[in-house]
Image (cartoon, rainbow, N blue to C red; front, top):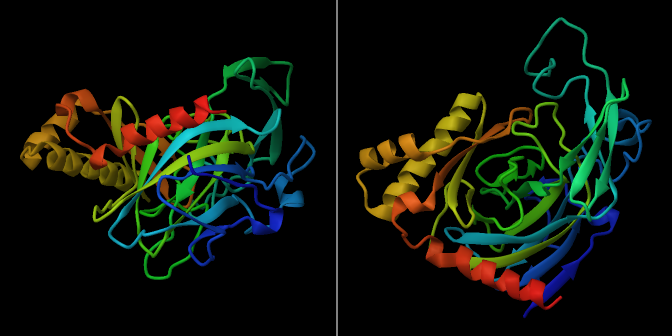
Amino acid sequence: MNVFSYRPAPEELSYTFGGRPAVARIAPGTVVEMFTEDCFGGRVRGVDDLPSQVCEFPYLNPVTGPFHVEGAEPGDTLALHFVSIEPARDWAVSTTFPHFGALTATHTTAMLHPPLDEVVWLYEVDAEKRIVRYHARRGDFTVEMPLDPMHGTVGVAPAASEARMTITPDAHGGNMDTPELRAGVTVYLGVNVEGGLFAVGDGHCRQGHGEVCGTAVEAAMNTVVAVELIKGVTTPWPRLEDDEHLMSTGSARPLEDAYRISQHDLVTWSASLTGLDELDAYQLVSQGGEAPVGNVCDTNYTMVAKLPKAYLGGPEIYESAHSRLRTLGEEYLSSR
């Protein structure tokens, strides 16, 4: 088994997709062990560490990478299977910001009311019990919630030599912030430049749909990803697959356009997999689909369209990449 381990130094973290040389070249079939820093670069460590004081814009939401996948060319697809995502620390943080989030004024949603307070919440992370502990800042209330690790940000370099801030989700991936991107899921990303140049970051111990306040339970992660290259197959928007479902994403503003992109991609993808007429696929997705929200707070919003694979009659999906990568991941875990 080809295993590559990478732990970036702080100066090696990336804050864009595109515009950066690869930190390593890997072959398809490689299992990558990586450390990812939290969205604050590890600088917010307690309730008195306000991001506006300890962080420097635009150096937020760092990603680990990019990784050059040998043989990847525009028109191909990278398949990244998340074998495991585990918190690297026994604490995590969340915040509110004066001008960021779904329920406050922002630079694009101008309001006359005062901005929200900047407040930090510190979460205890108990990986053994698989819980995180929430403590109210302005009261004695506390509650335990299930640990459900995920990555908010994954993507490849955009086309046309473009560089995009890691906080922005779009067709290349980026900061989609969907809780669906957890261990056991394969994400498919269309290759735009030689090598693909994928990167991963923004670990969350858990997140509600929409990431309403603008942050999740933000945490550094030890993550394992199995990588495969699918030649000559294009992917217009990031797609996800788990054992039971297919998922399409869409990122845009307003939210209804993100919804339409994700639904359009799932309908046309379902039609191509089954040979159904497009309107028949439209009807199938309309009655069998779900629509989990990714984020409603970033520079673009993200929606997910989700459909049980059982409704499609068992077609081959991306040359059965998910099944092969899941097996590779199981072999990796059993060898550790």
